[in-house]
Length: 31
Image 1: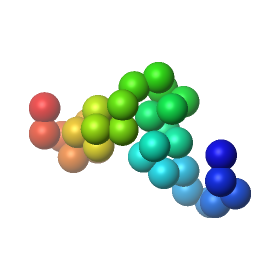
Image 2 (image 1 turned 180 degrees about the horizontal axis):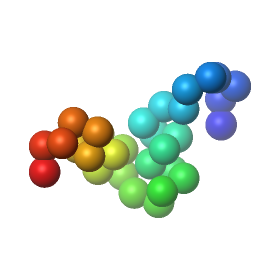
Image 3 (image 1 turned 180 degrees about the vertical axis):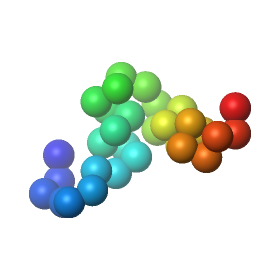
Image 4 (image 1 turned 90 degrees about the horizontal axis):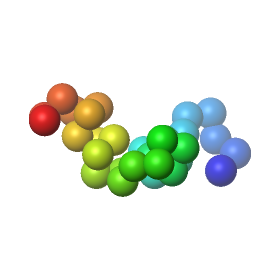
């Protein structure tokens, strides 16, 4: 993971084992 203060959507998705589109959709509450 990149040395950043905030993880990217792709980092979160990789940790959760889902696609980044899924994470984005959850964050934006559109589905």
